[in-house]
Image (cartoon, rainbow, N blue to C red; front, side, top):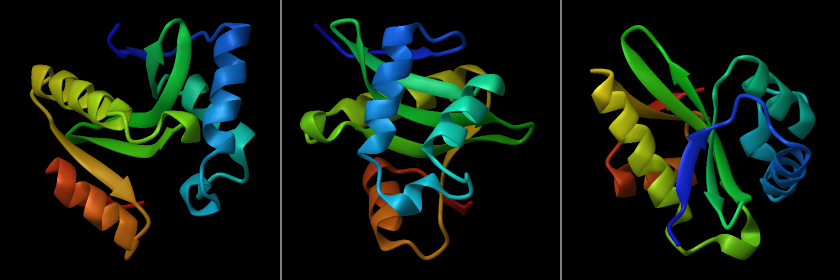
Length: 132
């Protein structure tokens, strides 16, 4: 069964629990500029910017997707530790790119300025990198 990517507007209680687990596994640098993991999740849902990967009815990954006038920004991409290295992030990014292309926009990866891991990821997936 493939990873299904969807925008999360009204998470179920199970989705909320899964999102907590996803961002619990996130490194602290990924949470900025939010005050904590709860603020990140609540803000993304309130702004209707949460994109998530689902497998077997459980969320495994999530990211914020900002649909700007000139381009779209993908940020705060995180995959549960137990699911990493299985192509889940790649699937989520590919779907974000498809949606952006469909809307006639270019997708950019947003991350902290100078963060080496983000630079490597951006190069690997072929996205321009913008500072958060």
